[in-house]
Amino acid sequence: MATPTVDGAAHAPTASEYIRHHLGHLSTGHQNGPVDFSVINLDTVFWSVAMGLLGSFILWSAARKATAGVPGRFQAAVEMLFEMVDDQAKSIVHGDRSFIAPAALTVFVWVALMNCLDFLPVDMFSSAFAALGVEHLFPYHRVVPTADINGTIGISLGVLVLMIYYGIKIKGFGGWIHELLAAPFGIWMAPFNLLLNIIEYAAKMVSLGMRLFGNMFAGELLFLLIALLGASATAFGVVGHIIAGSIWAIFHILIVFLQAFIFMMLTLVYLGQAHEGH
Image 1 (cartoon, helix red, strand yellow):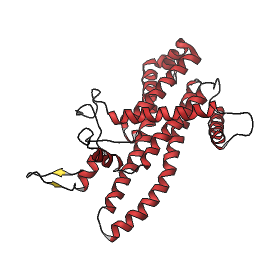
Image 2 (cartoon, one colour; image 1 turned 30 degrees about the vertical axis):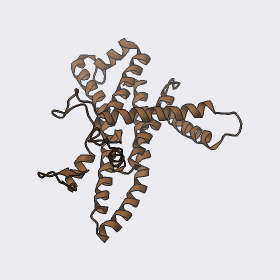
Image 3 (cartoon, one colour; image 1 turned 135 degrees about the vertical axis):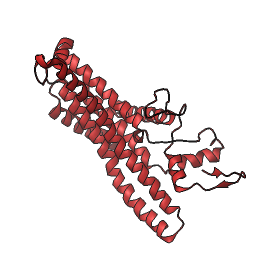
Image 4 (spheres, one colour; image 1 turned 90 degrees about the horizontal axis):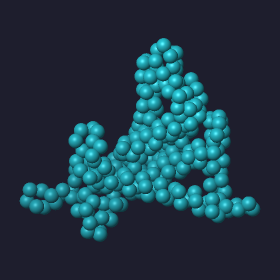
């Protein structure tokens, strides 16, 4: 990315310009204020859907090729992953798990794939767009959907819908409404109970999305800072870039899968709580 000057020449971006450019989204418009539902981050939508389709294809391929005999490495890996998720579901959800365990597995694979996009070089797409001569069509592009709070809150909103759905399915609509009004202080404190339960639902949704966003955004920002360290064109910068970049890349592998696991576990916990009464 080059920034034009007044006389038409271009100069290399400053560190702050470089970071702002890589943290910008390809959007349908300019966002006014912290919340603007008229603006859609197209890159977040594209990569979320793409990773969702890829994850679904991986799981579908494993199920289609599954055999009763000695499994291959691919089938064995998917079976180990499924058994891990199913064991966690058994210990958390007391009730029908026919839908919850597969949903948790899908969430884990989907979030893990979106997180793994953070391993791609930070300048790969901007360089590719420039090489193809379409950089004017993609002035901004962020490839990690989970580093966008809109993406993570969107996923946690889906979990909230499942929490309400299972609460109504297990307890009945009347039982669910009664729990909203009567728990935890009794029906005579109905207004306060309703307020507390609404806050609880909202807090679960927001904390679920914010936790994933915060960790992935921090990881993406560190990768950008390490890239700037190498761009300093000094011996210290180059050596520091190689050492710090390697260490952080290895450590980030753990963060990527750990955050996917935590998101899946909290999803199971929240759906398990929907099966139980206060």
